[in-house]
Amino acid sequence: MYFTDRGLEELADRRGEESVSFRWLAERMRDFVDDNPDFEVPVERLAVWLARLDDDPEN
Image (tube, rainbow, N blue to C red; front, side, top):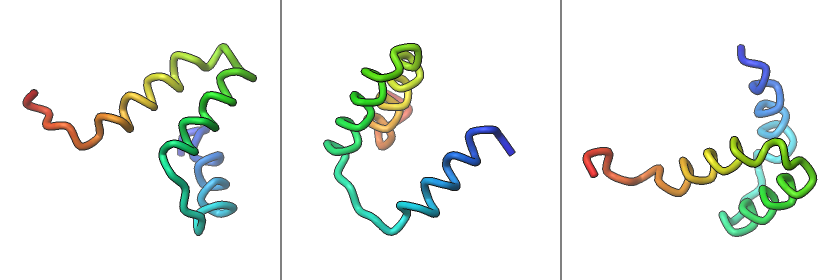
């Protein structure tokens, strides 16, 4: 188990039944980076990965 799995499990347990928009998620990620600027690069990478998730890997 990765260290991050604990946080992901807590997220699923506490908020797993909620529905949110990607716009809401992007705003929360911006808030997080504003409060934790050292995490800007990993948050950016996650955002790009989520944005391109359905892209054809051939392109």
